[in-house]
Amino acid sequence: CLQAEARASELGYDQVLWLDGREKRYVEEVGAMNVFFRIGDTVVTPPLTGTILPGVTRDSVLHLLEEWGVDAQVRRIPLAEIADACEAGGLQEAFGVGTAAVISPIGELRWGDMQLKISAGRTGPLTTRLYETLVGIQRGNLEDRFGWTEEVPRILA
Image 1 (tube, rainbow, N blue to C red):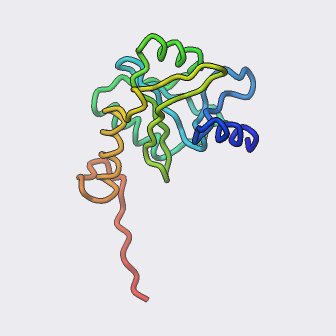
Image 2 (cartoon, rainbow, N blue to C red):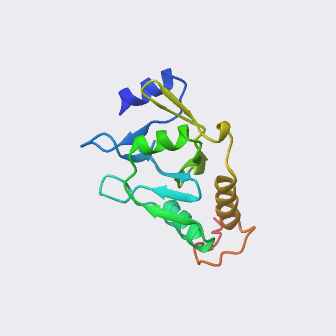
């Protein structure tokens, strides 16, 4: 993984989009984060197959998407599908999710010699809404209707 990360950095990228180890064609994660793609009006994310870590933020995003009526699919995603959707103008957004990053937009992917610009390199509206909602709940600025947060009492020394 260090070699792949070094190569990505040399090319000006912040993270590596990891593919499955067996066929090397299905998307798994981005860096150490779960990854989501919005293709048209559908959001897709890879299934938890044993090599992808289950994440609280991933579960929270899936829960919010369901509540908002967004079609979300958990399925294997060939990288070729992402490239084809991008070239056809259907890849609306892409983002990684994780505890530290919360929601991290992906503005461009490189696959071989192909550079895939996503949402003109800007953060998309769904990515923004998810980020603002999760951070708002974390900080207590939005009501936590899901029971996700727990107040930790301040301990005085």
